Image (cartoon, rainbow, N blue to C red):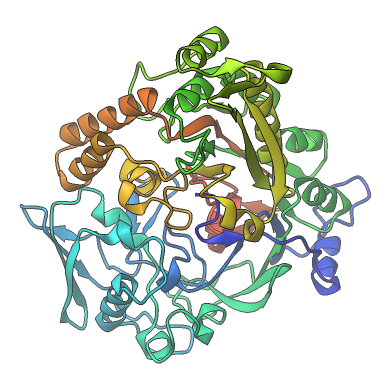
Length: 530
């Protein structure tokens, strides 16, 4: 979503970090070729709440401090990590057997074993563990240690994308098992098997990583890697231009300003990352299905893609991108202001003072929050409000931190986001399942539709791809007639990075970009250019 595992705080990187960054960009013509090639400082927009995989950190892979049983390659295909090979799957799809890699140790020197795998998954599934993503592991019936190098997962039903869930990082039982899972020191001082060690975490400022000299995959060439947490897009761009950063994620209009800069390289990552507006059913205006339907076609998605994203994205009609094999053709909604007005008229929402509609003495007005400093969310929110006003709906746009926004989510709308490329279940189940209504950042709109609930369950419980596709088609068609959210755009992620290392590549990315995504998804494989 937007912040199941992230919060953002404005801060500057301290002088020690600036020294590294400035040295990397001292070339007067703007190039970044003179600095140390074994260190990098990048600017990211989001900061994790925790660094414990038991609480959700790194659940989609690329956690840097940890490894999962499996990981993804550049094309998002699964490959072994802590497992020695891909799992053996029983004919009925109910048993997954993993053989573990030999010789792996945690960064404190203790050996990695099957006990750590069993501990990690059992702890996440424990009701006492504050992990908002535990429903993603609902299919697990049991986790068993067959021997020191073999783990067997037994499922309740044949959950087709289960192997994708085993990119989840493994925590050390000998450390995390001796602490309170929700509040212990492990949440901020993690020990893992990954390519990097956490050297320092200054909340709201930066995370500093150093290369793990005993990493089973070989010690990284980039010895020091710093992630500067800078939530404000404009500040991030300014810091990149001044030489404080070696790279950063930027919105399209700001990334475009670096096209002529020597020594900098812009990379585009295709994503499943969408922006949407939550329409909480607990609000008397957004809870009206006619209002939701009208907003769904009053919005001009193409104008947002062209004007806000500079073409770096696509119109969104649901959580599935239009170029995905899982997208249901025919569910696209054209911009139709006249149609929106007709829906509102027929539902009894009549034009009143200032052109704003009323019904039974109730004004068609509600508040829409967006995250302070997030220019893309701000631009989407303002454009959405402008389109709504043309239909006679007043939207009062406000900005705030997640601490301000979260208590208001059941009544006020939020310019939110989400998206996971690995499997349609991963995003849609938590977004639309009525059982998760109002559960923190799960189902923020408190959406409830029995047809959708059944299709969500059918899709995750079937091992047949055609049956799963039919279920997701049902969901996407239901969202046309009964939208709980207004989906706006799918956004390409743009990164501007010093052209001093190789390979600089990107993957197909989820919404939760930052630590796990970007050109630094494989920073452990970077090599300095000659």
